[in-house]
Image 1 (tube, rainbow, N blue to C red):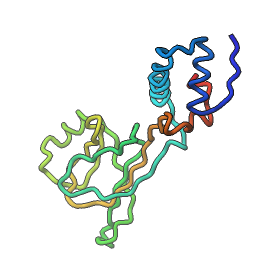
Image 2 (tube, helix red, strand yellow):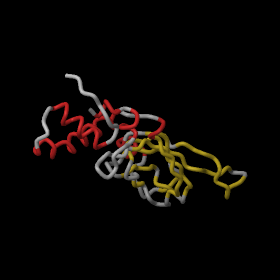
Image 3 (cartoon, one colour):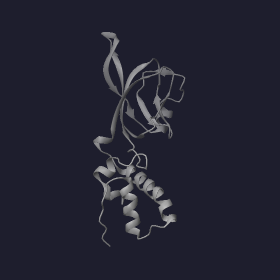
Image 4 (cartoon, rainbow, N blue to C red):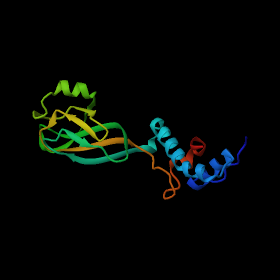
Length: 171
């Protein structure tokens, strides 16, 4: 069956789904937002593009072994701390990458999180946090580059990167 897709936004997608299903009943119409949301989540898991990369600068706090992920966080690209050279101990201008490691490795490497030192490793601690090990011995300027989840389309936000660039994926 051939459907002519007319509009690359949320409302057009709802209409196209109804047209494709040849059904505009209220029960189907009420389920379409869930269908669209599920499709977006499935696509977001596989999608990695330069447009999805975000860079944030912040300060890691001394004595804090975890860092809260941003709300739109999907997965980590790179994580750096700024360190100082011995010649200029008060100037933090050396970008030092933390090595990605498994959570198990981080706990084996640094089983006592109360021992403080310059961080070397980072791991996914849970859904909301990253684990930094060893626990930072001081505050460090830091930079994180991560992949973000695409903005979810809805009645309030009718377009996003998928509707603009890959509309047929959603259908």
